[in-house]
Amino acid sequence: MSSKENSSEPPSDNKQQDGDSEKGKEGDEKPKPVGLFSPELKHVRREIAWKWLLTTVILMIAIMAVLSLYWAALYHVESNISSLVVYVVDFDGQGPASVPGVEPLVGPIIQGLARTQVASGTPTLGWGPLFGSDFNYDPIAVRQAVYDWDAWAAIIIMPNATSQLYNAVQNGNTSYDPMGACQLIYQSSRDDTNWYDFMYPIISQFQTQATTMVGEQWAKMVLQNATTDQTLLRNLVNVPQAISPAIGFSEFDLRPFYPYTAIPATTIGLIYLIILSFFSFAFYLPIWFRFLNPQGHPPLRFIEFIVVRWGGTVLAYFFLSLAYSFVSLAFQINFSGGNPITSETQATDIAYGNPDAYGHGTFPVYWMLNFVAMCALGLACENVAMVVGQPWTGLWLIFWVITNVSTGFYDIDIEPAFFRWGYAWPLHNVVEASRQILFGLHSRIGLDFGVLFAWAAINTAIFPLTCWFLMYKRKHQVHEYWA
Image: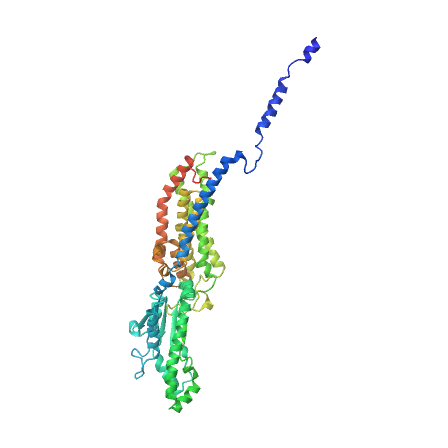
């Protein structure tokens, strides 16, 4: 009996525990994957479909709104291109040095063509016919006006252009050079896009028309006289250039856009400056938050956290802008002077590189410009990133790049009036100052730095508020995105 009783004893506690553990393991198993159209995913499908639709609509609206700014920048170029002023200055037969008794022909024809262009009603440059008396009969004063940005370019009909034509055919002057009759003065480095895309094609066509008109009228007059004057006819054989082309245009680029490695330094490369300023937030913020996470140490006072974070961010810009500036230096953009032509009215020699503005001090000025630019661009990104959070900072970056590019890389004068705010935008002033530093252009660098400092100051004033708002969101677990 005892052996049977022993065999009928209930299971031990160990066996019960083993059974419980097996059940626990079964309960901890992950749910088995199901098909997309499983009834168990019904509510999830609805949620995902709604959020996908909402996100797509918002992104579509953002794309159309923000990208439209870039397209719109060049929407009215044809109607606004007349704001690009080109002087047409006639010195022919004017002033104390003019040859008496010679009726001007070259100057009146070219100025008449300019007036015809303006009156035609078709989109064209802002031709401005002027006389030698407007510049005290000094062609160099016209060059100075172009350098000082009074005009984008100037066509100069040189003194005694017509009398030199007469002298060539009457005296058989074989040294006559048609290219000495007129000059084209410009600065391609002021805005190479403006010059080569919008201005030079029209000016080149104007020069061709002017040469043709002068040549036709001059040849007709000379050949009529040559029928009764054998000496004149012999001279024409010796000086054919006095008939065809009769006149030409010598071109003087006071500040040429060279070297071509300056293209990224004054255009596309500045986009990367914006991006560098933007991404510094994501790299440095986790470092600064170590002060506020009490893991083995007390948290830092919030006021001091703001000061340290702002100072550390600006200090980072100081060194990051140096690295950015070194890239231009490494690719042999001239930062140390050496161009023998320093006159504002002479065309510089590209054999010596770009005519930098400050000699050996050019690189420090260029570095400081990029540093202040990063402060202006980057502190704005810091403030926005702390307010809107992820993933909205990506849309902010697109907006920030496009608004700066559309007003910095294209001349605001040919853009719709809506874009006048671009004069106060950071990149417009960075581009203008960069060109002045690298090419020795007419200087407005004080204004450019002033605008950038204003951006940095305003964003510095806002910085404590956005830091507080960021901490408020973290404390209350505010989520900026619905995913």
